[in-house]
Length: 384
Image (cartoon, rainbow, N blue to C red; front, side, top):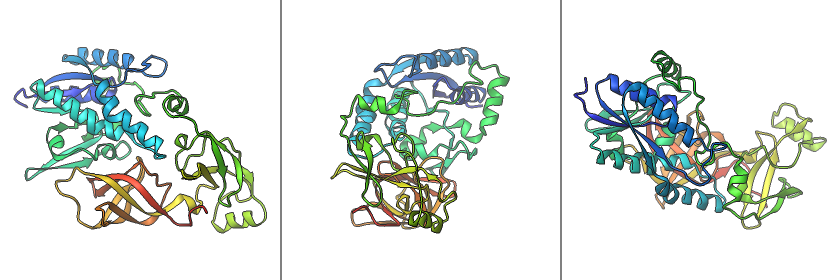
């Protein structure tokens, strides 16, 4: 048993945090639940479900037999996460606010609050693990590879990891669902939440349009031919296929031969368009046809704003990295440039490497940390 040590659990209303609280109580911990409200602007049931989530979290606490407290971190979230989110979009980059939310809110503001409540540790329903080795802490992938969330947690530092527990990281999702059903949790079959928490299910472009001014401009293909108009570079991300307002063009002649030479299936058919470049200087959006177009393939990247959850900055050498969530680990060589920025050279080309997203480094199952992608080197020339 755990000698009744106090652990504060972030109860989100979802099944993962609910089972986390249950498992810890079964292990003998004194468990207190905290529901974090991180967004207040137009928080309604149509798009943002925090009120419903709190009801679910309270119902879970009742079944498990623990106390729950509702804590409002909306001011901290707006200052530390949302403001940065807008700055990044306005600069033409595509940020990942969930990573910043973990580092600044869930494992900083929430952790501080839990310590004030006398907690020894905090726990969340993330699919990851923490291992202590000789007084140092390692962030490990969750055992369920399809649910692993270490990518989103790579900015946690040693102090944060030392105070954190991830009980469901030792389980597969199917087992978590089974436990929830077995003990009669009211949210056992609740659908997993997706997307950015403060946007919810509302159309992303409609949301962003409230905060960022439109600056329409031309859409051009790889030859510099204008084929449409965009509504503002901030509203597009590299690799984006939907919402471009241009249909596929039937390739023919030399274009068709080029497609076949690249081994594209369906050469001669309507190839979809993908966002490939954003030229802020000329306010031009460049698009290319075909998922495997060379403009979408990158051999290397540079990342800044580095943050290491490993005890020490990794030495240059061979590692694996992810440039987006749910991506397979990509073997690469790590170096640092004269600015002490992270430089990764990949064994195989990576698709749509996007400035503003995170490049996260791994040594086997150990997540070492990473940085924010500043630039990337494509396999072909940039637009003229």
